[in-house]
Image (cartoon, rainbow, N blue to C red):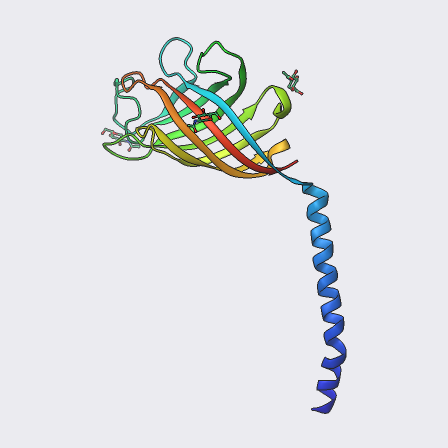
Length: 189
Ligand SMILES: *[C@@H]1O[C@H](CO)[C@@H](O)[C@H](O)[C@H]1NC(C)=O
Ligand SMILES: *[C@@H]1O[C@H](CO)[C@@H](O)[C@H](O)[C@H]1NC(C)=O
Ligand SMILES: *[C@@H]1O[C@H](CO)[C@@H](O)[C@H](O)[C@H]1NC(C)=O
C-alpha cells in the first residue's frame, strides 16, 4: 500500500509534464499547417443553364422508365452534373471568377428540392486556384436560403462557413437559374 502511493506521488508530476508537452507540440503542429484564422466574404452570381446547345448543367441519371427531356427538370431522382460559371455581376457576360462543379440530385418527390455536392473553385484574383466545398440541401423554390460551407482547398484550407443565396431568376420549364451568392468563410491560409 505504502509503496504504491509513493510511486504514484512520484509519477503524477511526470505524467502532467508530459501531457502538457504533448499539448504544446500538438498546438505547434496545427500552427505549422494552418497559420492564422481569417474571415473572407465572397460575392458572385451563379448561372445554372440547362437550356440551349451549350448547357452548363446536364442530366446524367434519372429514375428507370422516365422519358428523357420530359419538360419537367428536377423530377425526383434526377441527377445533374454541373460546370456552372460564377460571375462578378448578374450579367452572364460579366467577368467569370470561377466555376461551381459537381452534382445535384432532385431529392424530394412532388416538390422541387435539390441536394448539392459542389466545389466552388475560383479562377481569378486572390483566390485563384482555391475552392470551397458545399454539401447541402438546397430548397431552390425558396428565394432566400442558406447553405453550409463544409471545407476548402488552398487559401480556403479547413474552411467552414455559410452561403446566403438569393434567386434572381428561375425558370421551372427550362430549369435555368441565376442566383446571387454571399458567402462568409472562416479559413486558414
Ligand atoms: C426498368 O424498367 C423496366 C420496365 O419497367 C424493367 O423491365 C426493368 O427491369 C427496370 N430496370 C431496373 C434496373 O430496375
Ligand atoms: C490562375 O492560376 C492559373 C494556374 O496557376 C494561371 O494559369 C492563371 O493565369 C491564373 N489566372 C489569373 C486570372 O490569375
Ligand atoms: C449580398 O451582399 C450584398 C452587398 O454586400 C447585399 O447588397 C445583398 O443584399 C446581399 N445578398 C444576400 C442574398 O445576402
